[in-house]
Length: 279
Length: 312
Image (cartoon, rainbow over all chains, first blue to last red; front, side):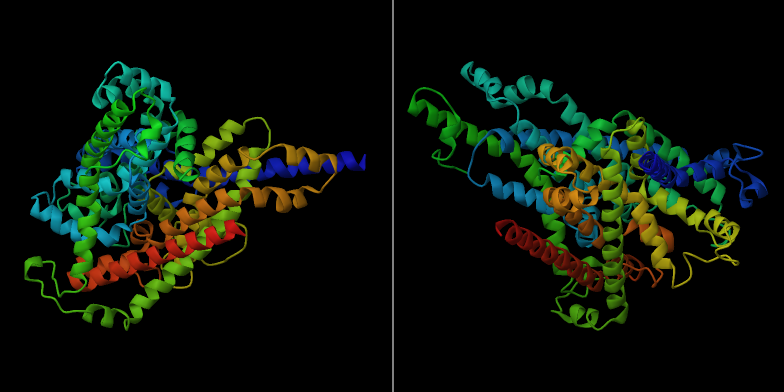
């Protein structure tokens, strides 16, 4: 009896712990959604369920700043970053993963080393580069500068993936006299769907969330990406921040990300661990 | 770019040696061809800007006219090392990194162990854990900023309801709690990453040790410290270094939550304030270079220690 009770209590404690984890991870976002649906003075009452839900804040976000434009900017930057880094990384991963040559390990370590660069350490040099290319206050400056953090992990993850594909695939193509370009596009690319989806999604999220470069290399509110726009939403004074608008904007840009992450959660976990554990 | 085929020849299985070496040479040539675009872009966006930043750190460059920069030697570093604000930023960053990474590791381990157990709705819980990771840092900062609000924040309201405090705390504004508030948000945001990395490590552990431990009736806590932890050490070391490097260069969370406030200012925030707000590119670049050096030294030291540890 006593033992049974102990086991039951242990079980109960375990589920209690699980419940605490869920509340801890989910509550802040839940609270943002609830706050975004409160208008006027409701916002300043602590209610765990909005008594008069209203969409006012959502309309206000788009009315008071070019938020639609900011979203389009973020989509453009994130998509172009993904396309460019995958194109560069697939080619490089073929060389690094399938061909033995001297200096390969050194190159891989160098690429990994770049992922440890603090962004601030390249900020002034990057600023000068972007200005001399005429890209200041242009979204292309972000696509280009984001390569510093998307390339290292796309190259690493894709190299690991390519290395593990069976040798026979390529040998048959070589015997048939296929050139490396054909081998990459016709033999490997069809097999790389899952790896490309994972790394592409991780690169998309990284580009979507980036703040320091976006804050420094854009000037006008029409060129801002979503994180900068949300960080710079301001009211009449610093004490009167329009919290309802900020929460509405936060929910708008986060919901698609959460949906993506939940759909691809298995892939993301394996992508993150492939980058970290095998690296 | 000619590389001898001696090392590479092993990989190709063509029957004739001459043909094999020709093929190998061709393959090595195409390897370099395929890598060149990636290497050029990396050199352009990483190597060159880093070199320029290091150079600017030795000049009196100003943001309004970078071309007029003159070499002044180590003067920027001389002033930097005497600036109490810089040392304050170093201290804040170190405290932030140490406290948040330690907490994340312990919490992440607890969550990973829970997720590794078998129970109904495990997939749902794993999905819930991923949510903070998916939320952009700027959004997390704003969300928590609102929850931490001194008058209308839900955290103060709940604490008052529970009778812990009777007057609202100005979490992000008061010097004694500002850094703590930032750490709380960082822990919330990055514990999932830690938990999932550790979970992946846990799932790769051999099951035999656990079976025999269970047969012998070893206490679960002892099993954790004697079997799980030593086996998990490699995964744990990798996860920790990733997180420490991230924490040492922290910028967005701190900047959005408390701007250029001295109580929370990290090294990155300090450097950017000098670079952009004060337009002092020379001095700011020196600070940025210092951060780069600190991170590089830390990485090398950590890797050396890890290697020594493995050889023992």
